[in-house]
Amino acid sequence: MKLIKFLFAGILFGIVMTKSEAVSWFRIQEMFRFESFHMYGIIGTAVILGAILFAIIKKVKGKNINGDQIPFNDKNMSIPRYLFGGTIFGLGWAMTGACPGPMFTLLGHGTWTILLVIISAVAGTYLYGAFRSKLPH
Amino acid sequence: MYSIVEFISQPWHWSISGAIIVFVMFLLLWFGGEFGVSSNLRTFCAIGGAGNKHDFFKIDWRKQIWNLVFIGGAIIGGFIATTWFANPEPVQISAETQSYLSSVGIETPQTIEEGTGYVPTEIFAPENALSAVNLLIMILGGLLIGFGARWAGGCTSGHAISGLSNLQLPSLIAVIGFFIGGLLMTWVILPQILALN
Image (cartoon, rainbow over all chains, first blue to last red; front, side, top):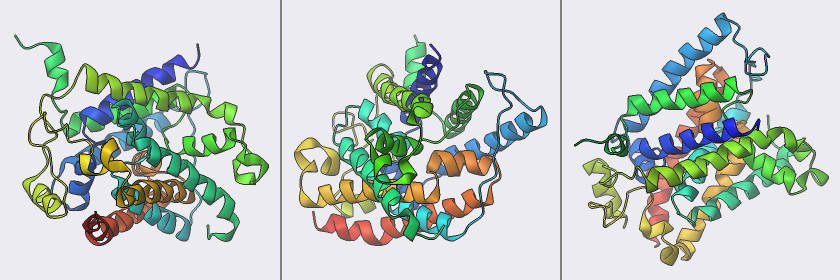
């Protein structure tokens, strides 16, 4: 059962998304209105600890469970791709109060109507694939 | 007596939450994956046969099954956290945000009987979700998330957390974009849309 470990990681992710309240539509409004430190604290802690973790893994040339070196690929530099794509994503994030991780977690809360957001997000991904060649990257 | 279940059931401090997210990211790397949730949306398209029409979806989705299992776990985690470790109080939102939301017709739950404070019933409750305005919020919002995440090559997990942790300038640009869009929606567009409800 090679996949069961990913299920375990996902369960922990769904629990922390819920208990951290990062799944809360209200928390996302509060974040974008700069009326609470909560979400900035979560993301800031994750980035600082994540940067330390990545630096250590690079230093010790850490390997994954399959014995392969953990890869850290540099992303290709572009401004329009990240700025325009990011802005469109941000519009949707603030509109629905959910980014992709929380969307799936909310489904587990029994918030069935979030399925509409998930299906639309799949459709949005499809539209990107269809119009990709016409967009600046 | 203060039980372990009660201990876990309280809302988690942001520092604990951030640390556990990094632990999840570590597990994914250690298991041979990576931390990026929105890639799954592309995988769904590929499974549905979108590769026959657009090259972007010509991927071997079988290699992405681990990530689908991961989000399947996230659904189960959401269930576990709200079933066995449910917070006895609704999410505590700042008074300023509550008063603003009230002015645009969204009430923040004050007691657990009124709601958990994860999503507003005015938008997401099944009896309200089918209004034209709420459908617009959910469908247009979802389209923007899917389109934008793929154009930018990642979402909050891939750019804001993995990418910034890897000191990637492109991820910083993407996160700046997330905030340009998020601020525009929160301060300018969403209040207009909610006023229609």
